Length: 367
Image (tube, rainbow, N blue to C red):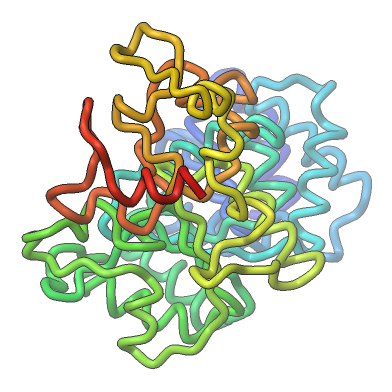
């Protein structure tokens, strides 16, 4: 079916059929309909909609492109008024925004959820204006062999940023599989072809919870994994449980527009991780006066209630979460050091330390 006819049919049928979902995957547009719409087999429909030739061919006219944007906006329930914005997003996506391949290893998908809760930009802008998301297993509609082919094609073509969420089970490769093979093999192949690697979250940056003591998977950070495979690609760590969406967006934009950002010894961007939480804490004056909270309802420094802000590098205390609404300490909870290298790794990690002294925290706080 000719591409113009296809989109006319979409416009005609959207109001009378269940238009399930439109997923943008880089230059791939996957449109999932009921079988009754086209009367075609799933393989025939996939061949029409998954190769990216329908929408972003350069020979499409401006008029047809505007019609396409209007059809897309309407099909998503946005109305004709959203067509200009849809067109702009399509143009920017097609114009070469950074290609991103997002792979998940041992993770809870918390960093994915955090990214999708991005406030400025919102989730739609994030995947259309700030990046060209080629594949993400959580939000991509492609599954099975189709998903594997998208990943393989992306890796073979190169010219992409690899985002890894979660640590890699080096001691038990079968603990995390993708397409019938260990995720470690896929990450190694992708990292070898990527322009740079971004480790999102504490699990991928430092090992995190999956790398806790006595874990049989032998989980390691992306950095340790790349070293073990002798893969010398630029790496950026964005620790946090979860990673703040601003850290991800800011890093991707910086890499695209200006190149690699300034990094500290732990490969963290200094624009986000240069100061300890303790120095930025709204209760810092209470610490200096020796005014310590004894329970979670008390005012005062939260040090004796388990706060490890004195050894945690992050700007979340003033950046805040949920669109700048709140932070852990502002809400009365101590910093648990989720962006730190030692987070949850040792059995004696002071996550639930109440009324006990922590020698390292005390030493750092007194500097």
